[in-house]
Length: 328
Ligand code: ASP
Image 1 (cartoon, rainbow, N blue to C red):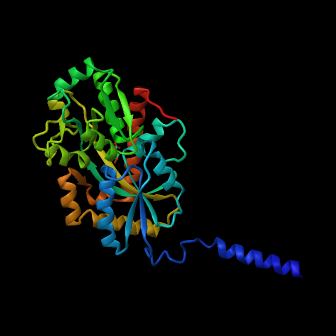
Image 2 (image 1 turned 90 degrees about the vertical axis):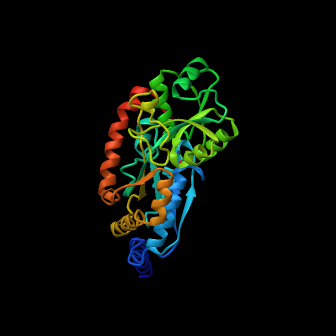
Image 3 (image 1 turned 135 degrees about the horizontal axis):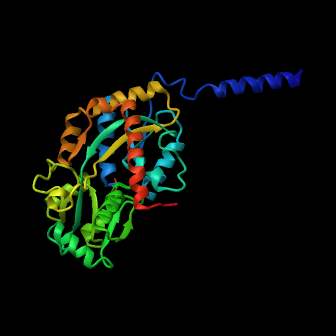
């Protein structure tokens, strides 16, 4: 009898424990601080995009949102952490195009960008710029190409690790000029920019969110923007095509995710808050100053992000395969 009673107790306890952890507070969500994991260092482009978004979403959700930087390995360390987080709506994840290229670049990836995440919505599209330290000898892209080819053993190119946007842009650049250069990986282009400003590295390709203010202040040189058209915040900077490398285009998009299994009502609430945030005048003003363009409202949805991520994975796979770059 005693044994039976204790068995019943254990069964009851298991029942209580197996009630979904979020069942109780799903309706009151959010009721505590939300953390957005950014898979790159503080001060870089993804960090900037995420912090401005966190501020605006905090207002629409009337709840505090903080950013945690988990940099390294081109964003895959932060992505792994986000994939393994509790799916209760209190850990979110902002990543860029690198979320779509990692499966082709990494032989062993501890997560699957589609299977292990719930898409919430796209955030923005943005241009990249090819920039160099202030005293780099080349004055324009044509001079840069000649200089780099003649000095390839001593020129180095910074990036934020295999799979980062700066790394992808670097692959496109080296493929376009058929010259292999030494690359220097950082945990994000925030610290890479510090070294570029200090003259410790020669050049890099990075989002306008990180380069615009330094270009305008004359602290770094710029050779081109990676879009089909010039970008509004840097109207005097030519496109890479205008400057001498035709069809050199790459646009960096950011998106918001939650770990797989986050309840649908929470995802819908977050998607609505994202859409609200993208209309926020302060966010719009700051994004515009940095040439980060908030997406249209119908792209800030789980469905649009799901489709976009899949098509970007399919698009980049063959390009990366052709370039023959892999990481373990
Ligand atoms: N812009 C970086 C990259 O190259 C990452 C970052 O620090 O946001 O992907």
